[in-house]
Image 1: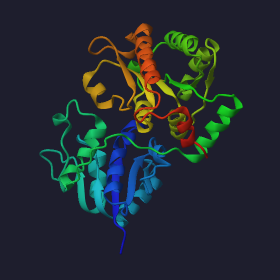
Image 2: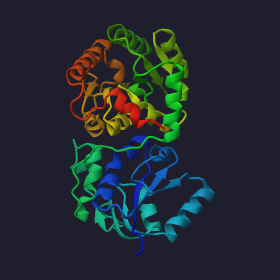
Image 3: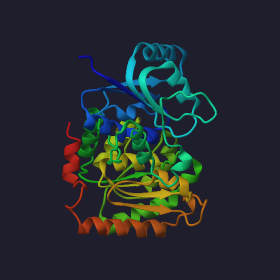
Image 4: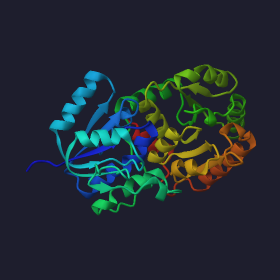
Length: 344
C-alpha cells in the first residue's frame, strides 16, 4: 500500500517554525505511518535538521534554479494533506497552494477572494491572547484532530551535540547558564552594562559558569561582556543547530530573543526572558517551559531596554529558589539527564 504524504508549510522565521512543530507530533501520534514533509525557508529549515517527526524537508531559497526545482517537486508530488498554519493573508501561502497537488488543504482563505484551501483556519482576529503554538494545533481541528499538547518539539543534531560536548570538556565546564543577548529587532536590546551586572551578580551568588551565544554582528559586545565578567565564555553558534544544542543542555537560559524562548520551551529548559510590553506579542510568544519567568517592560509599548537590572535579578532569584525547592519534580531535566540528551 502506498504511503500517504502530508506537507506542512512554515516559510517564516526560526521561531515561527519551532511553534508549528506540535503539528508534527500530533500527526505522528495519530498515525505514525504517513510521510511528513516540511516546506521551509532558507533561514529556518535547519532548525528541524534532527527532528524526530519530519521525514523530508523542501527549502524555498528564492533563488531561480532552486525555486524551479521546488516548483517541479510540488507539481509532481501528490500530498494527501496540505497544511499551512498561517492565520492571516499570505501571498506566498496562496502561491504555493495553487502550485501544489493535494486531496485536502487547510489554510487561510482570504475573505472576498477565491478559496484556495478546502478547509479554513481560524483567523488571527479571533485568536487574540492565544499562544502561537496553540493556534498551530487548532489548524488540525477542521480535520477532526483535537490535539492537546501545544509544547514545541525539537531534536538535537548529533554533530552539534558532539561539538558542544567537546567544548565543555575542553573548558572543564559541566553545567552552565546560557546567555543570549542578541535581539532580532532594536526594541529587544538590553544594555551591555546590565548584562555585565546580571552575570556578575549571579556568579557571586551561585558560582555559575556562563556560555554566551549571539549573532555574528554582536561579537564585539560579547567580548566586552566576557572581559568584564568571570567564568564566561563565548560559544560560537554559526547556525541554529548549535544554538539548539546549547539551549537543550543549559541549566537555565537568559535571553531577549523569542526564537531562543521557543527552543527552550521545546526542551523544557528553565528560562528568564525579557520582553517589550506589547500585549498581543507577549501572549503569542511567551515561554512554555514549566519553570520560567517573563520580565516585561513597565508600561504598554515600552522596550526591553527600559527594564531595570533589579527587576531581572528579582525574577531570576525567584526562579532559582523555585528550582532549588523542586530539584527532581515535574518535567524539568536535571543536568545529568540533559547531558544524556546530547551524548553523541
